[in-house]
Structure formats: C-alpha cells, structure tokens
Amino acid sequence: MAINTEKLGMILQNFATATSGVQGSALVTPDSLPFGASLPGAIDEERVSAMSASMLSLGKRIGLELARGTVNRIFLEGNKGFGILTGCGEDAVLLVLASETANQGLLMLEIKRVITEIKSVLL
Image (cartoon, rainbow, N blue to C red; front, side, top):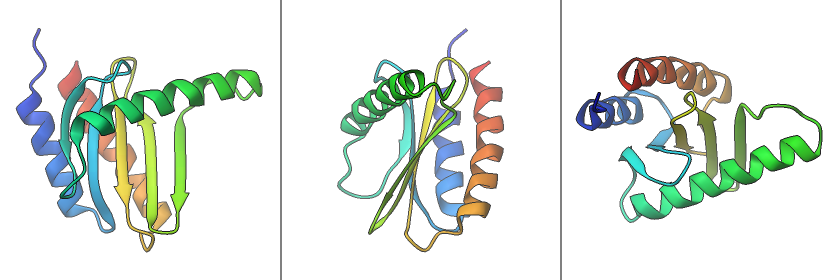
C-alpha cells in the first residue's frame, strides 16, 4: 500500500499553522527520506531529513550506552527555539521546530495528537 504523502503534507501544514509557537515540521524515514514537510523559508527539506535521521541514530546509541532504554524523544533547546524529534512508529520520525516562547507542555500535547493522526495515515 502506498503512503499518501499529500495527506501527510496537509497534516504537517495544519499542525504548523494551528499550533501556537510551531514554526515548522518534517516527517522523515529513519534512513533520511522525507515523507513531507512544512518548514520555514530557507530550510532545506533534504538536509533536515538527513540531520533528523542522524540525530535519531545518535540518540538511540546514547540511550543504549547510558542504559536509558528506548529513546522516545530528543529535545534540542537553543537560544532561538526548540527542535523536538519524536518517533512515529518504526517507519517515521517527526521533527518539530518551535519558537523560544512556545508553551512546552501544550506543545508536547499537540505533538502527541499529531503523531496519532500521522500514524493513521502511515498504516
């Protein structure tokens, strides 16, 4: 069964526009292939896909080495905002870019919600 990348793109676009503080998002495979993205301006989707897959791979290795178990989320905090990488099952990873003023609790709830929506399309 083919994955509806157009539907995934619409989900990501709606998530980015409807969730306060979200500046963009991308859905990628663990081996760096993009499923879809809604990213701000000059950010390259292919580069984001490659970096997300690399970050996930490194995060998994760190989780094993530090005996932390399965990595559920990787959270990057910079002085200009957040990058949150969350698994969407075995076949996809969601990257969310958020502003430094984003409400983190609400953001995590909305990420859980959109992951459920994404998983329904990936099945």
